[in-house]
Image 1 (cartoon, rainbow, N blue to C red):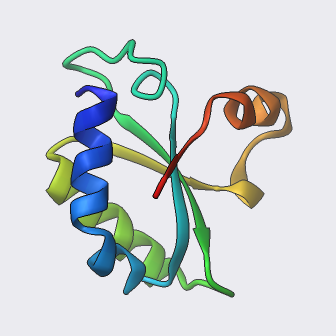
Image 2 (cartoon, one colour; image 1 turned 120 degrees about the vertical axis):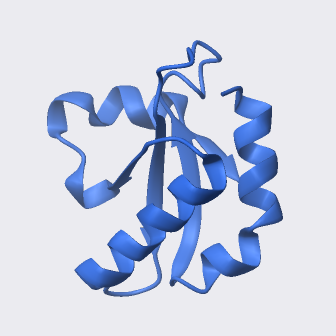
Length: 96
């Protein structure tokens, strides 16, 4: 899936995505670098408004997978491993 496709889908579903308590979404990884293949998942960094429950996190993940029709690796800044944090932060693309 190409970067512009992912951005378009996420923007078109912005209202529903925000209803999950999302403040901001970013894409990163192979999709952000335009290196994705048919087997690639979509890496998404999410910032939530306040605390989030595991149920809401999983509901958002499944919703994104349904809309994008592919596997989504959904991560929060807190869950980023220190050894990859810098590279992720350099390549993130904010979804408006």
